Length: 541
Ligand code: NG1
Ligand code: ZN
Image 1 (cartoon, rainbow, N blue to C red):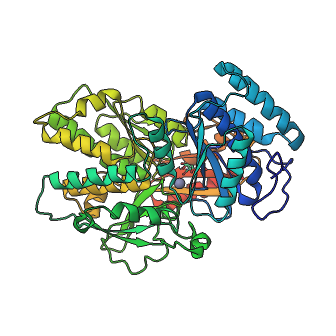
Image 2: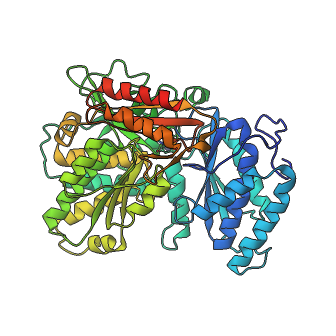
Image 3: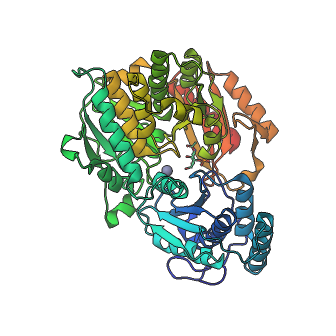
């Protein structure tokens, strides 16, 4: 490494690219892995300043989630387990875009001003300042972890723990738990929390004789780190009595894992193409299937019905299932003073939002990215947030925790609420914890996957396209991302096209993770939704 971290993972010198502007996007920095070394180094440096100014453990996750194996990324995790604060994202962007000669000077002036603001001497390294670096299964990850560690060292933090082959949500949870004085740090703590509560929940489900729910599930692991972790969940002390059996597919754990990571499989593939991932050809109809993404923070369900039609149950459907269960428990308890809310993005299927309205909940629409959904969700006693792509969870307020505290002779719905809150990873969206939460609720209602698909709502037809676009900075959207402010003409043309279709809506927004623009359209039929999306693609191109 040079002082600015300019060596890529092949060992080649890699000068900071000057013709490219890098941005801390929806999920940190995500680029082709050969461009990532100096970014990882500088993020390690910034994370060390964050850890020193707060005197706590800060996380850095190395992953490019659902993106192809040639990409990688880094993002900083706050001591609370949440996404990096906005002001610091700007600092990150500034540091990463500095050229090699500017960087050292900028690094030292940044360190000075941050430590001054904290009221500490520039060189202070408080005792609890520590960096946890996590990575998924990508080939380029070990190298980038080293770059992060060197960056942290450059920022004077030598206490660094590495968590290899970790899911993104596991790293978030461990950072959170380590900073909590009363929670013990243990790699398997979140796993046990979920499975113990799941066992207890299943024991207490009202219907003893199952008519519709079948306790078996096939999981597409996207050839990513989720495959290793689902096994950890199943490896429970009482594993012989595990209340369901799970078959893993696309669970390559060796060199092939990288070649096939997220390729024709995984939650993003299934959501985007609405079709079976590779390896699912012979799965019988009406069989419940689920897909994780490469770092296991997303989850979607799918199956083909008896007519051979592929049906997707995405993040919106999971949110609706959670809402149905949670509202039922609150009703049974007559607990009127606990607020319940739902947070979605512009990509939420129109019928999911209508379903929430029918339950008396007006969903809040915020900009794409968990960093925007999570804080809004925390404004409710029970906040359910999901991106349509399957990333989400449920958050709980202090009032909720007080309410579910164990007392003698607790009514059953209160126990079920408490257990549900333990199955879930309430710190961040977690594909595997969500999987157990979905299974628990389906078991509670004694529902087959077909019941879930038909008894809540059915999707309004929609289509999503992505088109390559180099200069995404020309786009500016409204805060909820449903309209373009710039280029103004483009929005006018979109409006004209939308008005030509029945029950339609559509929008475009620049991706925060890929050099593309995303197009989303809804209309009265699948063909029309796709047709409208293509029309809008022409407007953008
Ligand atoms: P971008 O590329 O900004 O649309 C995508 C997803 C987000 C989120 C991030 C992080 C869509 C439409 N967007 O962001 O929801 O998951 O990746 O991985 O799915
Ligand atoms: Zn992911």
